[in-house]
Image (cartoon, rainbow, N blue to C red; front, side):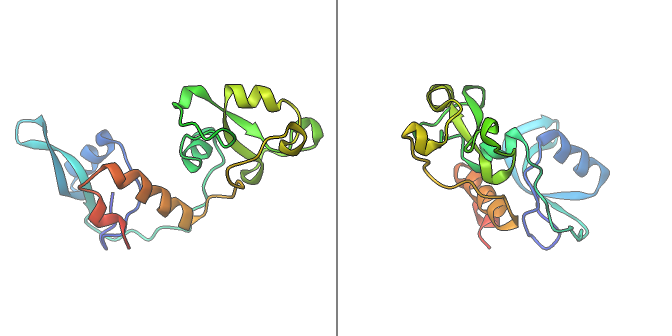
Length: 160
């Protein structure tokens, strides 16, 4: 979904996009080849008709957002997994006073999570692929760009 200024706002579900189109709040910029209803193509990119001032986004700490930030990749072995095959792992274990925060949570496969157990990566002899960081507006835009790699029709709207 784009703002009226063509700035990417977020990735929304097709149902939400259709509701915005039917209400007249948005227009279709790009569409898929599939039809939802006679004369109504499935939208791929929509743009809001009026500019919406968006507050500075604060990403919610959630399992989904951690997995998106880490690209569904185990931060210890580097394997790519389905969401259901990954677990949230505390870099500094809760047993050692580690907090549930952006900077202390990473995606890990079950094997790596079990191998690390309640030790720090150094104690377990494991190394993180990258240090976990808080998701900011800049990283969320980068994640949107990354998601758009497989969507040819999104690309021209994601590079700004």
